[in-house]
Length: 470
Image (tube, rainbow, N blue to C red; front, side, top):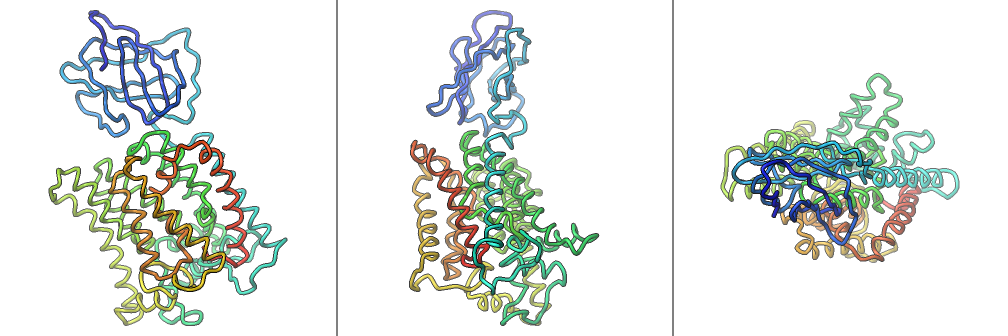
């Protein structure tokens, strides 16, 4: 409990901070923002606090500002909410000549996002992907059957696989007739190619470059949003560490390719963040855009609705209907495909041609029950590992509404009947990054980032050689 004391005037309060998840506890004239086992100590932060009876917030990052809440902002970017019943005291920072600038460690009070560690993870992981592309094009042998949407160096690799299809849609739109061996381009949803076409309109010859640059920029934006959402749900440390682990994920090369994954991740995270902040029309709009990016976006309506349903005291409210924008947007594109082809079942038939019975949009591959080669074994381990992470949901206090996201990703794999895109699916399921971030064993914290970067390089090289489907 925060006890300002019996004085009539303000008193100086020293701040002792440990790193996230932040909980406010106060002893006499001391404020602590506590977390985990970290013992980083800040003694050069002072505040002016008027007397009053205050109680600490159970979770600073989940609080909403109200009439009885005051913001405590510490020098160096550490802040917290202190909620108090009764009379509201005024809180302000008071100057102190002894204060020196504190290391922020990326903990920005009002604008959580990029910090040095995350920037290094982004730059390092993207350099690994570029190196893999260079090796695939210059040093090692490449599958001659692998197609690319752009023949320029590096872009040849980054626009391969589904990038060829997306850039074909950018140039020529959709076709009713199959383009290659019975495969249809309307198996791919429209928002990403429409955005690339709009941005490359003045320079259509650079559409491949625009697509790749767009994917990389959107991935950076997605990581910033993941930090913001993670801070709201779990606290600072897990939010930052989860974003770092996602940046260096073994399958994260897809976020640098001419694929829709970066856009989908941005829209999904933004939709969850809008719903968490109770901005329901915005959440519905973002969900609709996500559903126009990938069919799986429409499925996110369930966890998003559950967030609102629980917030509304387990009651149905008319405002929850904003989330129907997602399924309606997905249905609208399927309707467009039906009009284009003259067949209501055209989209399902296109998926069947790709070797899929359910959701998804990757190339055909061996069935789950087929004999496993090395690539299939890697994907099977990835699938099992994703399921195993859910064991830690309760101990990590990840809300079960978010645990549905990786469950749906695994469900999409089983619905498709093949393993080949499981890495992409489970990487898009962002709560997996939070679950990984909750593993505190020393060997994991020290060993996994290095191993993950090595795997990212190897998997990327295999992708760009045409030996591993993204």
